Image (cartoon, rainbow, N blue to C red; front, side, top):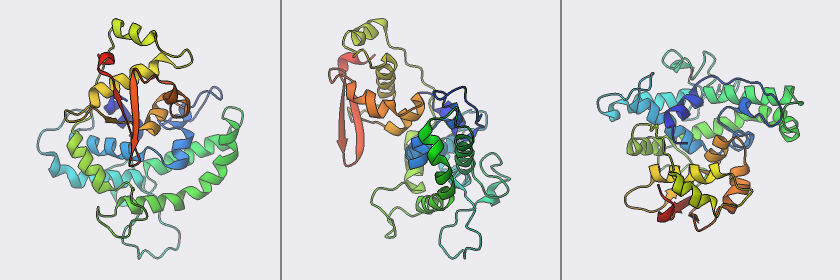
Length: 287
């Protein structure tokens, strides 16, 4: 979660679809099965992608010049990543299309010649792996993968159309949806992708260890403190907590379902306001 360039590469590079056992979820890439199923965590993912397109070259180097001049390029990159072929025989009268195969030459790794974007290909490949390998995936994944695979294209088209709606569109399906306009604004505000390394002093680690619940992995607390230290803004003590993305980072949903509730309030305080999960680290536990 601290090396955002590596996060960008995880969302745009190849995924190896194999597993050594049911605890091995590397075949999901940087997702949990639940994140793929529910389309959760997409706001951060799309913002990471947009920042990569706006500020970095193919080798990760920060580009010179004004990033606003690359906004069209970044938006096309998002469209390519999200691309999904239109329904066969559909009358393309809708304002927002979902098939961006025309960007294949510009973004060959993100959309293929048939209009299947990176996320579309990854979803189908992950579900196929779960369906075809019941011995190395969890039973719940095996049982639901086939049905999810069938429904994906239709559900994802709805999302991709929503992404393209203007900020003040009256046709939005819900008050809180992700739009490319929001993503681009956030990307410009956040700037280039970070590659931070935050090491907690041994004294601080010992202080945490003295009050850490036995069943709560120390890595969870350490990562949250490091993430907070690098993402806190000058005008606020609170940092948005992207729970679904932390789940994906840790490889399962234990972070959101089990570990968060176990963190002592003497270290981290949490709040949910207007549907946004956020947290703050008490000053004495900051590096």
